[in-house]
Amino acid sequence: MRRVSRRGWRVEVSAAAALFLAACVSVRGRPAEGPLDEAQIYLRAWAEGDYAALRHVVADPPANLEEQHQRFREDLRILSSRFELGRVHHEEDSAVVTFRALHVLRGLGEWEVNSALRFVRREGIWWVRWTPAVLHPEAREGDRFSRTRTRSERAEILDGKGQPLTHLGEVITIGVEPRRIQNRAAVASALQSQLGVDPVRLQKVLNAPGVAPDHFLPIIDVRPERYQLVRPALAPVPGIFFRRKKNVRLSPAEGFAAHTLGRVGEVTAELLAQLGPTYQPGDLVGVSGLELAYEPQLAGSPSGEVRLTHPSGEARVLHRFEGTPGTPLRTTLLPEVQSAAEMALEGVAQPASIVAVDTATGAILAIVSRPLEQPLHRALTGRYPPGSTFKVVTSEALLAKGLGADAPVSCPPAVAVGGKQFRNFEGEAFGNTRLRTVFAHSCNTAFVMLAASLEPDALGAAARRFGFNVEYQVGLPSPGASFPEPRDETERAAAAIGQGRVLATPLHMASVAAAAESGRWRAPYLVANIEEHPSASLSPGTRAPLHALMRAVVTEGSGRAAASIPGLAGKTGTAEFGSGTPLPTHAWFIGFHKGVGFAVLVEGGGVGGRVAVPIAARFAAAL
Image (cartoon, rainbow, N blue to C red; front, side, top):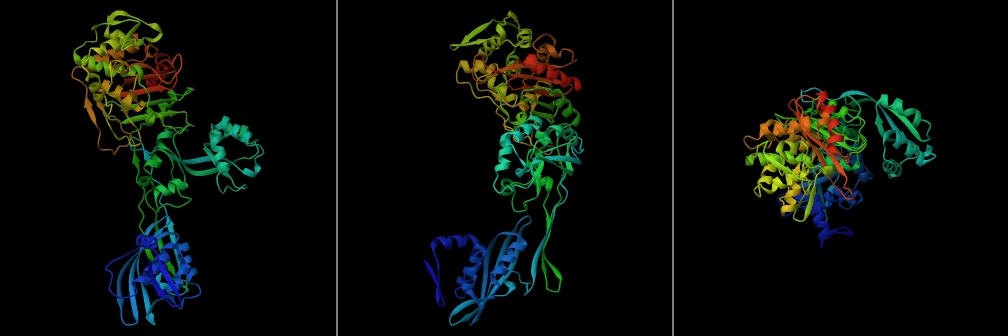
């Protein structure tokens, strides 16, 4: 315990307080003599906001000492202050202790002030001779501090051709006024049925701390055309209200690339903590998608001034925060491809996604996740067993071994591996046939037996050539695809048909289709300035036979529902997951057409050839 004696009282600085002080006040070159302890006490009290304690070290303190410090903090919206002690210059009964103050101003950032504490010694005790110059060297009695702040217009998100993906328009905010609600269940039901708003979300808004009963609480923004459709059902419900909002950034159509582009909204307390001191309550920020991921780039930084105004009205600028304008973010999306993908999913009731990539570069041309009401961007972040779409990878391993597209193979109705029975869909069997036929009709038993003939690491090596277990940057979070090393022959058999522990995102499976078309796997990417693009060549001589196998799927096999699309090639998948008898299945189709590799997934959709292929056909036809 360190004690500093004062006239008539004593200040005690405990070990814990000393540690806190070290965080607020640091000392450069501690002198042998002078009022250093008193300076530390003063600055610690300032940093802690304990303004009453300042009087214990101030000689003849002004009546408004605490008020001046409080007003300084409030007028400049200071979040925190740190201090660094400098030198002590002292004579017999006077001294000056210099210090550097680092004030963090909400919404602007850090402001550095070099100032000083002036001391007088009376009867052996050092006292601060306080004037407003302690707050800032240029401040005098009667002066007031103030600040300004401006933010530049948010930068645009651009498409692959450098054109804006959004425009300014009008939306209608649909919300509630708590005191007008007569029946919460009726409000929740109306918002859910008309707009897909989760009732849990409504309850969170209504039950949030500090909610004023007479205030409008926003729930969802909709375009004028949708507002006209839902208003007749919503307007009669007591408690639901509407407000127009202009100059809002809008995409070409409602829901267009919604999960990818994200949205802009008022900053939340959680985001304030993440984004840092250059943001303040009321700011509009990205709250999801690219708008959030690239918030600093799109928003830039605010500009502002710290001003000192004299009683005469004369104002002086003490500091300028030089803001920076936001810079546009260029993506690889092509609006026409994105629109084709979204139209292909119209009317699909189950959760679904489509991803399309450029087969020559890996650039993502379109990416769609549905339903819109769910925040999960399943096309990017959902990982699923790829099912029979993985047979593209297994076939590449077989072709690399020397097997030809017309090589003789067998397709029995069932085969046992390690005590586990593997069967074909709906009991199909093709007997003694060719590789082309078992690929086109997705014969599980044939691929299970063929995989057993491969070298132990051959399947894993082929998976790596298609980007499995490869880390890459997309521009938004995406976990890619994993191919765990099979632990036994049963796992190897399951992996060969895309089951077991094999998992992939729809985005990654689109890159697999693109690799089959181009002969080289390229990591998919969404943001144009990503510099590193991992890639790998497929085995020599496998590209042409893969084309033939995948084309046969459409012309004669499980993808015949898309046979009307010239040149379309692909692979269906019906991937088991979960539990039950029979097991539920995801419906897949991956393919390529006109230089575009793509993947279609319908969660729990059933059979790939019956559910995913018609969606793929609509998409490919629009290309």
